[in-house]
Amino acid sequence: MGILDFLKKSPLQERHEEAVRQQIEKQRAERRKRFRVLVSLKDEETLYVVRLAARLANCETCDIILLYVRPIDRSGSIQINIARRNMLEAGVELPGLRLLKKGLEVLKEELKMPLDRCETHTSHTDAWGDPAGDNKVSFRCPQGREIVLKLKVAPDITTGILDQYELGPYNLIIMGEPTRWKKSGLWVLFHHVVAERVMALAPCSVMIARDSLDRKGFFICTDGSARSMNAVRRSAILAYEAGEEITLFSVAPTQAEHEKARKAVDDAAALLDKLDIPVKETIVAIGDPVEKIVEYGEKYLVTVVSDEGRSRLQRILFGSTATEVARKARTSVLDVR
Image (tube, rainbow, N blue to C red; front, side, top):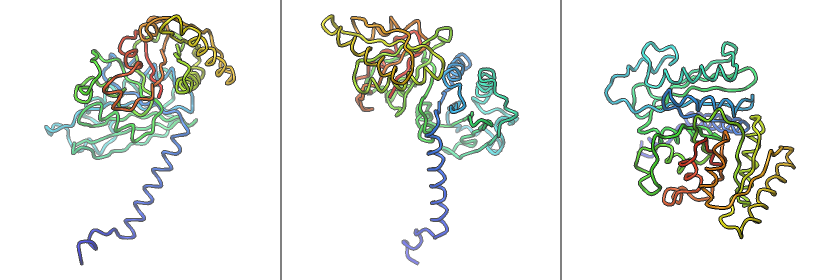
Protein backbone atom coordinates (compact mmCIF):
# COMPACT_ATOMS: atom_id res chain seq x y z
CA MET A 1 0.00 0.00 0.00
CA GLY A 2 1.45 3.36 -1.03
CA ILE A 3 1.34 6.57 1.00
CA LEU A 4 -1.45 7.94 -1.24
CA ASP A 5 -3.58 4.88 -0.54
CA PHE A 6 -2.94 5.35 3.17
CA LEU A 7 -4.07 8.99 3.05
CA LYS A 8 -7.12 8.31 0.91
CA LYS A 9 -10.41 8.52 2.80
CA SER A 10 -12.71 5.54 2.90
CA PRO A 11 -16.25 5.84 1.47
CA LEU A 12 -17.60 5.67 5.03
CA GLN A 13 -15.40 8.59 6.13
CA GLU A 14 -16.45 10.64 3.13
CA ARG A 15 -20.15 9.98 3.78
CA HIS A 16 -19.73 10.93 7.43
CA GLU A 17 -17.95 14.19 6.59
CA GLU A 18 -20.58 15.07 4.00
CA ALA A 19 -23.36 14.42 6.52
CA VAL A 20 -21.65 16.66 9.08
CA ARG A 21 -21.16 19.40 6.47
CA GLN A 22 -24.82 19.27 5.46
CA GLN A 23 -25.92 19.41 9.08
CA ILE A 24 -23.76 22.49 9.73
CA GLU A 25 -25.05 24.22 6.59
CA LYS A 26 -28.64 23.47 7.58
CA GLN A 27 -28.06 24.89 11.06
CA ARG A 28 -26.45 28.06 9.69
CA ALA A 29 -29.32 28.52 7.23
CA GLU A 30 -31.84 28.29 10.07
CA ARG A 31 -29.85 30.76 12.15
CA ARG A 32 -29.78 33.29 9.31
CA LYS A 33 -33.55 33.55 9.60
CA ARG A 34 -33.25 34.79 13.17
CA PHE A 35 -31.76 37.86 14.87
CA ARG A 36 -28.82 36.55 16.89
CA VAL A 37 -27.03 38.64 19.50
CA LEU A 38 -23.64 37.69 20.92
CA VAL A 39 -23.06 39.28 24.34
CA SER A 40 -19.47 39.27 25.59
CA LEU A 41 -19.25 39.30 29.40
CA LYS A 42 -16.28 40.72 31.27
CA ASP A 43 -17.20 41.08 34.95
CA GLU A 44 -20.18 41.61 37.25
CA GLU A 45 -19.93 45.40 36.93
CA THR A 46 -20.79 45.12 33.23
CA LEU A 47 -23.90 42.95 33.56
CA TYR A 48 -25.80 45.94 32.20
CA VAL A 49 -24.81 44.61 28.76
CA VAL A 50 -27.15 41.67 29.41
CA ARG A 51 -30.02 43.97 30.38
CA LEU A 52 -29.42 46.05 27.25
CA ALA A 53 -29.39 42.92 25.07
CA ALA A 54 -32.68 41.79 26.62
CA ARG A 55 -34.19 45.22 26.00
CA LEU A 56 -33.15 45.26 22.33
CA ALA A 57 -33.83 41.59 21.53
CA ASN A 58 -37.04 41.01 23.44
CA CYS A 59 -38.96 39.02 20.84
CA GLU A 60 -39.34 35.33 20.04
CA THR A 61 -37.35 35.58 16.78
CA CYS A 62 -34.26 36.79 18.66
CA ASP A 63 -31.59 34.55 20.17
CA ILE A 64 -29.17 35.73 22.85
CA ILE A 65 -25.81 34.06 23.39
CA LEU A 66 -23.88 34.95 26.55
CA LEU A 67 -20.15 34.44 26.06
CA TYR A 68 -17.28 34.37 28.51
CA VAL A 69 -13.78 33.86 27.13
CA ARG A 70 -11.24 32.45 29.56
CA PRO A 71 -7.48 32.01 29.02
CA ILE A 72 -5.98 28.63 28.18
CA ASP A 73 -5.22 26.66 31.33
CA ARG A 74 -1.63 25.42 31.20
CA SER A 75 -1.23 24.84 34.91
CA GLY A 76 -3.32 21.68 35.05
CA SER A 77 -5.50 23.21 37.78
CA ILE A 78 -8.71 22.43 35.88
CA GLN A 79 -9.81 18.83 36.25
CA ILE A 80 -10.49 16.98 33.01
CA ASN A 81 -13.69 15.41 34.33
CA ILE A 82 -15.34 18.85 34.47
CA ALA A 83 -15.28 18.94 30.69
CA ARG A 84 -17.52 15.88 30.53
CA ARG A 85 -20.24 17.20 32.80
CA ASN A 86 -23.01 19.75 32.60
CA MET A 87 -21.08 22.90 33.40
CA LEU A 88 -24.02 24.39 35.32
CA GLU A 89 -23.90 21.42 37.71
CA ALA A 90 -20.12 21.16 38.01
CA GLY A 91 -18.96 20.97 41.59
CA VAL A 92 -15.84 23.00 40.80
CA GLU A 93 -16.74 26.13 38.88
CA LEU A 94 -14.68 26.99 35.84
CA PRO A 95 -13.49 30.62 35.55
CA GLY A 96 -16.37 32.74 34.26
CA LEU A 97 -19.08 30.22 35.08
CA ARG A 98 -20.40 32.21 38.03
CA LEU A 99 -20.68 35.27 35.78
CA LEU A 100 -22.58 33.33 33.10
CA LYS A 101 -25.00 32.07 35.74
CA LYS A 102 -25.64 35.63 36.92
CA GLY A 103 -26.15 36.71 33.32
CA LEU A 104 -28.74 33.96 32.93
CA GLU A 105 -30.55 35.16 36.03
CA VAL A 106 -30.67 38.67 34.54
CA LEU A 107 -32.17 37.32 31.31
CA LYS A 108 -34.77 35.30 33.23
CA GLU A 109 -35.77 38.47 35.07
CA GLU A 110 -35.81 40.75 32.00
CA LEU A 111 -37.45 38.33 29.56
CA LYS A 112 -39.80 36.65 32.06
CA MET A 113 -38.35 33.34 30.86
CA PRO A 114 -39.64 30.08 32.43
CA LEU A 115 -36.54 27.92 31.96
CA ASP A 116 -38.30 24.87 33.36
CA ARG A 117 -40.35 24.81 30.14
CA CYS A 118 -37.30 25.07 27.87
CA GLU A 119 -35.49 22.18 26.24
CA THR A 120 -31.92 22.04 27.56
CA HIS A 121 -28.90 20.81 25.66
CA THR A 122 -25.27 20.70 26.77
CA SER A 123 -22.16 20.17 24.68
CA HIS A 124 -18.40 20.08 24.99
CA THR A 125 -15.69 20.69 22.38
CA ASP A 126 -11.96 20.16 22.79
CA ALA A 127 -10.09 23.41 22.18
CA TRP A 128 -6.50 24.69 22.31
CA GLY A 129 -5.32 21.66 24.29
CA ASP A 130 -7.10 23.00 27.38
CA PRO A 131 -8.31 20.29 29.83
CA ALA A 132 -11.89 21.62 29.94
CA GLY A 133 -12.13 23.06 26.40
CA ASP A 134 -15.31 24.86 25.27
CA ASN A 135 -18.57 24.20 27.08
CA LYS A 136 -22.09 25.24 26.15
CA VAL A 137 -25.58 25.06 27.62
CA SER A 138 -28.50 26.05 25.39
CA PHE A 139 -32.14 26.60 26.37
CA ARG A 140 -34.67 26.21 23.54
CA CYS A 141 -37.96 27.82 24.55
CA PRO A 142 -41.34 26.56 23.29
CA GLN A 143 -41.83 29.69 21.15
CA GLY A 144 -38.49 29.12 19.41
CA ARG A 145 -36.19 31.55 21.22
CA GLU A 146 -32.76 30.16 22.13
CA ILE A 147 -30.66 31.33 25.05
CA VAL A 148 -27.09 30.03 25.16
CA LEU A 149 -24.36 30.15 27.78
CA LYS A 150 -20.95 29.66 26.19
CA LEU A 151 -17.76 29.22 28.19
CA LYS A 152 -14.98 29.46 25.63
CA VAL A 153 -11.23 29.05 25.90
CA ALA A 154 -8.86 31.09 23.71
CA PRO A 155 -5.38 32.65 23.75
CA ASP A 156 -6.99 36.08 24.26
CA ILE A 157 -10.48 37.55 24.52
CA THR A 158 -10.56 39.10 21.04
CA THR A 159 -9.62 35.80 19.42
CA GLY A 160 -12.33 34.05 21.43
CA ILE A 161 -15.03 36.54 20.39
CA LEU A 162 -14.08 36.44 16.70
CA ASP A 163 -13.82 32.63 16.75
CA GLN A 164 -17.31 32.47 18.25
CA TYR A 165 -18.61 34.71 15.46
CA GLU A 166 -17.39 32.16 12.92
CA LEU A 167 -19.51 29.54 14.70
CA GLY A 168 -22.56 31.83 14.44
CA PRO A 169 -23.44 33.65 12.37
CA TYR A 170 -24.47 36.64 14.48
CA ASN A 171 -26.17 39.93 13.59
CA LEU A 172 -24.80 41.90 16.50
CA ILE A 173 -21.97 41.73 19.04
CA ILE A 174 -22.53 43.65 22.30
CA MET A 175 -19.70 44.31 24.72
CA GLY A 176 -19.10 46.68 27.61
CA GLU A 177 -17.06 49.85 27.45
CA PRO A 178 -13.32 49.29 28.08
CA THR A 179 -11.65 50.98 31.02
CA ARG A 180 -9.27 52.71 28.61
CA TRP A 181 -9.04 53.46 24.91
CA LYS A 182 -6.03 53.79 22.66
CA LYS A 183 -5.49 55.46 19.31
CA SER A 184 -5.78 53.65 16.00
CA GLY A 185 -2.81 52.10 14.24
CA LEU A 186 -1.09 48.77 13.75
CA TRP A 187 -0.63 48.43 17.50
CA VAL A 188 -4.40 47.63 17.68
CA LEU A 189 -3.45 44.12 16.54
CA PHE A 190 -1.19 43.60 19.55
CA HIS A 191 -2.53 45.53 22.54
CA HIS A 192 -5.27 44.34 24.85
CA VAL A 193 -8.06 46.89 24.45
CA VAL A 194 -10.56 44.29 23.32
CA ALA A 195 -13.34 46.69 22.26
CA GLU A 196 -11.17 48.46 19.69
CA ARG A 197 -9.84 45.24 18.25
CA VAL A 198 -13.32 43.75 17.92
CA MET A 199 -14.67 46.94 16.31
CA ALA A 200 -11.80 46.89 13.82
CA LEU A 201 -11.97 43.18 12.98
CA ALA A 202 -15.57 41.96 13.45
CA PRO A 203 -17.55 41.26 10.25
CA CYS A 204 -20.90 42.17 11.83
CA SER A 205 -22.35 45.19 13.65
CA VAL A 206 -20.80 45.95 17.05
CA MET A 207 -22.29 47.79 20.01
CA ILE A 208 -20.13 49.32 22.73
CA ALA A 209 -22.55 49.38 25.66
CA ARG A 210 -22.58 51.81 28.54
CA ASP A 211 -24.82 51.81 31.58
CA SER A 212 -27.32 54.19 29.95
CA LEU A 213 -30.45 52.14 30.58
CA ASP A 214 -32.18 55.11 32.22
CA ARG A 215 -32.32 56.79 28.79
CA LYS A 216 -34.66 56.12 25.89
CA GLY A 217 -34.61 56.28 22.13
CA PHE A 218 -32.32 55.60 19.18
CA PHE A 219 -30.26 58.55 17.91
CA ILE A 220 -29.58 57.50 14.33
CA CYS A 221 -26.95 59.42 12.37
CA THR A 222 -26.89 59.66 8.58
CA ASP A 223 -24.86 61.40 5.90
CA GLY A 224 -27.19 60.52 3.04
CA SER A 225 -24.93 57.88 1.45
CA ALA A 226 -26.33 54.53 0.33
CA ARG A 227 -24.39 52.73 3.07
CA SER A 228 -25.70 55.16 5.67
CA MET A 229 -29.28 54.78 4.47
CA ASN A 230 -28.98 51.02 4.77
CA ALA A 231 -27.78 51.48 8.35
CA VAL A 232 -30.75 53.78 9.03
CA ARG A 233 -33.16 51.13 7.80
CA ARG A 234 -31.62 48.28 9.78
CA SER A 235 -31.18 50.17 13.04
CA ALA A 236 -34.67 51.69 12.77
CA ILE A 237 -36.20 48.21 12.48
CA LEU A 238 -34.27 47.20 15.62
CA ALA A 239 -35.47 50.32 17.44
CA TYR A 240 -39.08 49.77 16.31
CA GLU A 241 -39.09 46.12 17.44
CA ALA A 242 -37.61 47.20 20.79
CA GLY A 243 -40.27 49.89 21.24
CA GLU A 244 -37.78 52.77 21.14
CA GLU A 245 -38.47 56.19 19.59
CA ILE A 246 -36.26 57.32 16.71
CA THR A 247 -34.43 60.60 16.20
CA LEU A 248 -32.61 61.17 12.90
CA PHE A 249 -29.50 63.32 12.90
CA SER A 250 -27.05 64.70 10.35
CA VAL A 251 -24.03 66.97 10.69
CA ALA A 252 -22.90 69.61 8.20
CA PRO A 253 -19.17 70.37 8.65
CA THR A 254 -19.82 73.92 7.34
CA GLN A 255 -22.80 76.20 6.82
CA ALA A 256 -22.46 75.67 3.08
CA GLU A 257 -23.31 71.97 3.52
CA HIS A 258 -26.34 72.55 5.72
CA GLU A 259 -28.83 71.83 2.93
CA LYS A 260 -27.09 68.55 2.12
CA ALA A 261 -27.37 67.48 5.77
CA ARG A 262 -31.02 68.51 5.84
CA LYS A 263 -31.71 66.44 2.72
CA ALA A 264 -29.98 63.44 4.35
CA VAL A 265 -32.35 63.38 7.35
CA ASP A 266 -35.39 64.14 5.17
CA ASP A 267 -34.53 61.25 2.85
CA ALA A 268 -34.02 58.97 5.84
CA ALA A 269 -37.38 60.01 7.29
CA ALA A 270 -39.05 59.31 3.94
CA LEU A 271 -37.46 55.86 3.84
CA LEU A 272 -38.77 54.99 7.30
CA ASP A 273 -42.20 56.38 6.44
CA LYS A 274 -42.41 53.82 3.61
CA LEU A 275 -41.67 51.14 6.22
CA ASP A 276 -44.40 52.54 8.53
CA ILE A 277 -41.76 53.29 11.16
CA PRO A 278 -42.49 56.61 12.93
CA VAL A 279 -39.77 59.20 13.46
CA LYS A 280 -39.99 61.38 16.57
CA GLU A 281 -37.84 64.22 15.21
CA THR A 282 -35.05 65.17 12.82
CA ILE A 283 -32.07 67.31 13.81
CA VAL A 284 -29.33 68.98 11.77
CA ALA A 285 -26.22 70.49 13.34
CA ILE A 286 -23.13 72.31 12.03
CA GLY A 287 -19.63 71.51 13.21
CA ASP A 288 -17.22 68.62 13.73
CA PRO A 289 -19.17 65.38 13.08
CA VAL A 290 -17.74 63.38 15.99
CA GLU A 291 -18.12 66.19 18.52
CA LYS A 292 -21.69 66.97 17.47
CA ILE A 293 -22.77 63.32 17.44
CA VAL A 294 -21.39 62.85 20.95
CA GLU A 295 -22.94 66.12 22.19
CA TYR A 296 -26.44 65.55 20.83
CA GLY A 297 -26.49 61.79 21.37
CA GLU A 298 -25.73 61.67 25.08
CA LYS A 299 -29.37 61.81 26.20
CA TYR A 300 -30.42 58.74 24.18
CA LEU A 301 -30.23 55.03 24.94
CA VAL A 302 -28.25 54.27 21.78
CA THR A 303 -26.31 56.38 19.28
CA VAL A 304 -26.18 54.74 15.85
CA VAL A 305 -23.40 55.37 13.34
CA SER A 306 -22.81 53.53 10.08
CA ASP A 307 -19.67 51.76 9.02
CA GLU A 308 -17.78 53.74 6.37
CA GLY A 309 -17.09 50.75 4.17
CA ARG A 310 -13.42 50.56 5.07
CA SER A 311 -11.54 47.27 5.04
CA ARG A 312 -10.27 45.75 8.27
CA LEU A 313 -6.75 47.01 7.49
CA GLN A 314 -8.03 50.53 6.84
CA ARG A 315 -9.97 50.54 10.11
CA ILE A 316 -6.84 49.38 11.94
CA LEU A 317 -4.53 51.93 10.32
CA PHE A 318 -6.79 54.98 10.15
CA GLY A 319 -9.62 54.28 12.56
CA SER A 320 -13.14 55.45 11.71
CA THR A 321 -15.80 57.93 12.73
CA ALA A 322 -17.67 55.09 14.43
CA THR A 323 -14.65 54.21 16.56
CA GLU A 324 -14.09 57.86 17.52
CA VAL A 325 -17.74 58.23 18.51
CA ALA A 326 -17.62 54.99 20.53
CA ARG A 327 -14.48 56.21 22.28
CA LYS A 328 -15.86 59.63 23.26
CA ALA A 329 -19.59 58.97 23.72
CA ARG A 330 -21.35 58.89 27.06
CA THR A 331 -24.03 56.46 25.94
CA SER A 332 -24.11 53.14 24.10
CA VAL A 333 -22.89 53.27 20.49
CA LEU A 334 -23.97 50.92 17.67
CA ASP A 335 -21.62 50.64 14.68
CA VAL A 336 -23.77 49.20 11.87
CA ARG A 337 -21.98 47.23 9.16
